[in-house]
Image 1 (tube, each protein chain N blue to C red):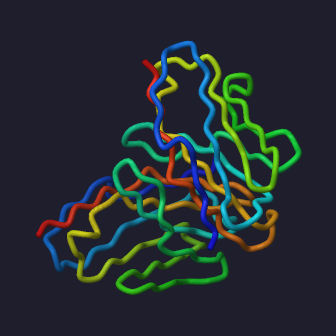
Image 2 (tube, one colour):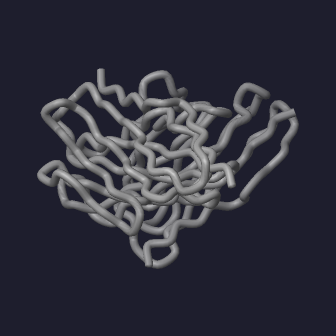
Length: 118
Length: 110
């Protein structure tokens, strides 16, 4: 149990276009979902935390209007990279948690989405 | 600032060797600490999770220890195999937030 999927697994797009990445919890309801970004040979950096039905909380330095997050249901969160540019090329990973913060529960990670902006 | 540091950045060992990966964190008010494995271009596989009240966890050939007071954790891999080659990430949880180290790239030579 506790499987998280991401779609697409990788995407190539032209500069200036928008790209949507989906994160789904397949066999559990996720109270909270997280979006991370990983540049080559670097570690994961948390971009934002989203709770179902409320606005996402963005980390310092992450542009809210650039990276739109929608957590529409307890099993789906989407990250839209708007007006993508080559510097947005990265590996985007989502994770999901079943229980609210304060109750012991690990985060379950998706397989990641590789974005290449030409 | 909550920072996680992993040493060494890269490690190459012959098959069969026992090895230790190190992780240190600046803020000891942790909720838990987790070790992950990441294969190239792939997502994360959780290896071991240690709650803040625990001192170690074991799974097969893996043993992770936690010393909260000194802000350190180690991941011990016994009898390493070529299949263990991957990047190992240490992540510390603070409240609802995971802070990751930069990872140790491990290569086990056959």
